[in-house]
Amino acid sequence: MSERLFFSEARGRVGLKDIEELEKRIVFFSLNFYGDLLMCEEEVCKKLSISARSMRRYRNQNYFRYIRIEEQIFYHR
Image 1 (cartoon, rainbow, N blue to C red):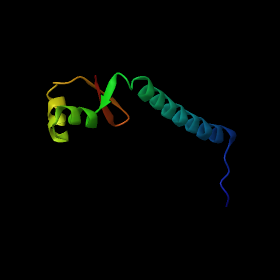
Image 2: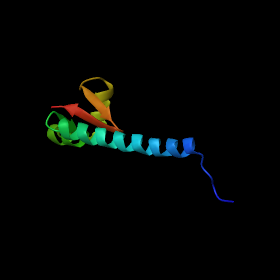
Image 3: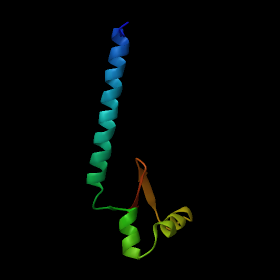
């Protein structure tokens, strides 16, 4: 038996794909736009000569301001 979609279901699935694509574009734009203002966690660790674990501990103790974008953490320059 083949799967039959009603118009509203098919349109909903297409709409969801459009939303996911839009989200990817927003994240990509955000990373490019803020690239001069933000540093990823690895960059900060290298500049400070500390381990990733130490950086997480400092972040949890609120020593640094940061933002999270799609599971990635960025710090202000």
